[in-house]
Length: 241
Image (tube, rainbow, N blue to C red; front, side, top):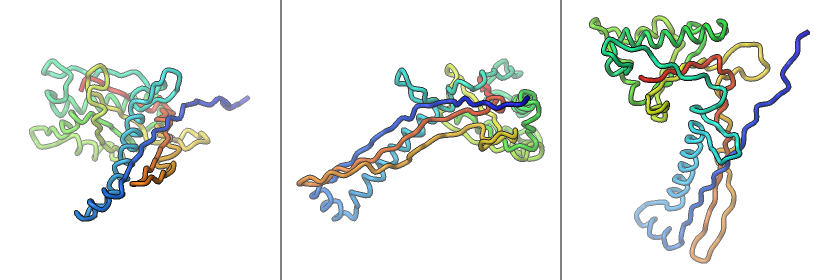
């Protein structure tokens, strides 16, 4: 008889607050220079909250008892695989040829297909390759005939996109990494089919304002539960690039 899983993976919500204070005389002086002190400080406060949200999305938040994980440390992620040595004697894309880098990516595509039992078909499924910022430009390494990884992907894996992030620099013991994963999986589940999901209950919650004699204080907050890896079988992580 068939059944269904009634368990839930739980995460802890983390909240950050950011305040701004604007003085009456400060507003007057700023306006004389055509500067809006209120708007400038409010923009900076919201940007600060977004920076915190983004950091939690990659690294999680460890307060000792919580369960807030990120893209780099969710417990359901597969282990890193070290890419093969090139003819230069090391694994770095900076010293590899286009064909050697292509082989590293082919290993990832083959891994996704095999580990998912072909639920993920890299030629038909939307695939994202997230590459360390320090290594992403080596994907433009051409052959002697000018053929590059981008051209090869467009011809053979047209639904694949490449992105980069500085957080992937040195992410595995000081080694640069790349992630390859399906964006969604059609496995007949009742959820959204996403492989990764960032849970953000609030991006900007206005907490309140306190009026003072010479100005006011305004407080904003956000809330995040980090990133879930919902389908680890649709993720390949490689290190040493």
